[in-house]
Length: 206
Image (cartoon, rainbow, N blue to C red; front, side, top):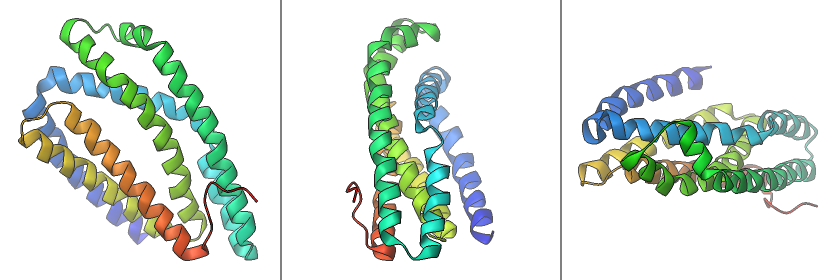
């Protein structure tokens, strides 16, 4: 409970700093394009199929039984399923790229920016699904506090990286890079903690 409060405070502070700075560097119009891309990322995550909460529950049960093999089986199976559904979502986004852009009624420079970055958003959506499973695994192992801190750390990485790149004169790609590094941090930290705790090999179904 304490970790949840701490994580919430960190997230609120980080967002309170981030939004005004994003608007300062990008302006309302360009930042609006990013929000549209972020919306696509959110919808793509529907391909998660509520697997992450299921993994948390099942991992907790196997952890209670001391069944490391069971934990490995559930986690790797979930990752495998999401690789399939995530790849499908990636293909659909790329195939309907023009239609997605037209739905938001973008035109001119904004449509060009969205078209340029949408493939990267599609790929990032697959990574997000996998990272969510890894973070849920930590919660299932009984360390929701660690899971919360890792997610908050990822939020700090996102904003910190994005603001540095924006300050150096980069554009909307700063937010993409910031998010990519954030999920890399969350995924890497989650894998490290999982391996340290139960010493399982991910992406290997036994």
